[in-house]
Each structure stands twice: as C-alpha cells, then as structure tokens.
Image 1 (cartoon, rainbow, N blue to C red):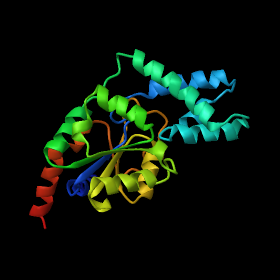
Image 2 (image 1 turned 60 degrees about the vertical axis):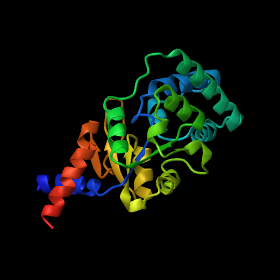
Image 3 (image 1 turned 30 degrees about the horizontal axis):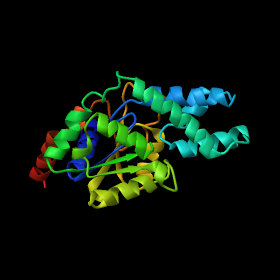
Image 4 (image 1 turned 120 degrees about the vertical axis):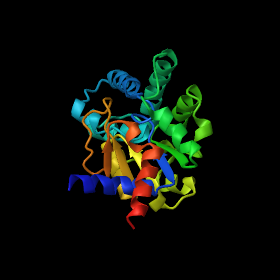
Length: 239
C-alpha cells in the first residue's frame, strides 16, 4: 500500500509541464536575513513579537505582515513606514552578507527542468526588488519564463492569487503545473489554487505544516526530471 501511494504521487508529477517555484526557503535561505531585519524593526517600534506569532508570518508578503503587526499591537503607524524600516534593514544585511548561497541541489534542479523544456515561474511573496537581487546575484534569469511578486498583488499567501497568476504566466494549464513550497501559507495557497504542491521540508524550514502538500520531499533529487520521466514510462507500460 505504501508503494502504490508513493507511485501515484510521482506519477502525477510526471505529467506536468511547468514548475512554479517559491523563492525564500526553496531557492535560497534568506530567512535569517529577513528575521534579523524584522526583529530590528520590532525593536525600533518597541514591540515584543513571540516566536509563535513570527512563525505564522512565514510565506507572507512584507506588506501583509506589517498590516497584521499594526492590527495586533494597535500601532499608530502606517504600513509604508514599517515596510520601509524592514526593507532598509534587509538591504543592508543582504549587501553585507557574502555567505549567502543557493540551497543544495536547487540550481541543478532548475537547470535540469529548463534543459528538458519545462516552463519555470518564480512566485514569491518577496518584493520584486529582493527577487531581482537574488536572481542577479546567482544568474537565474535565463532559466525562468517569468517572475511574480506577492508584494504587487492585492492578496498574500495563503490566498491563491499568486499561484493562479503564476500558472497563467507559465503558458500551461493549471493541471499541468506544480508548485514547490516550503511554508504552510504557501502550500495552502497552492492547494486553494487547485495546483499540485510539493512540500520541501528542508533543514531550514521550521514550524511549518506539510500535511496539505500532495508530496513531501527533503531533497530536490527526488523530483528530478529523469525520475519524473521514468515514472511516466512506467505508467504508460501499464495502461
């Protein structure tokens, strides 16, 4: 029974033509920089944010997080003020951190999908400014058909808007797309959009719920293009 369950999930993946990538926690681990920037901002405005509350923000846009902070602590500050504080701290941290690297195996996966004709779209809650910083530093633009920022949308994850638009940008039908996500909010957004979701449970992910993901992996090699194709051949030989 376990074998059949695993086979069916891989089998679904084998039919897909587009991969919709989250960025933070999937392509690169900028969470330590974001955390430091947020807590510097929290300190500036003299609020005490618990670990539980902070964990609930994972995967959401800066704008949405700042709105929640203002509502939760009943602050007499505007969202743009908090956003600018946080982004200024993040930019300084990003520019001074030379140790930031892509997550293990993700560049190989990106190149693998691109070489085999899959459409790749980046769908991140990060601002487009931050997305471009990452893509330029690691030379990723040539591999992706499109990039979309949740900061430019009306709704934030777990709302499905970002993945609905990412699927459109891929040029493929929703049923032919799958999402790679590491956060509870992102997984919920993918499922609300009606898109197959791979939950990436890495060592960098903390306090996230993967129970709604269609498939959970701990290394990118588990969803390499060759493994997906082998699963498709296996399927065809039994149909």
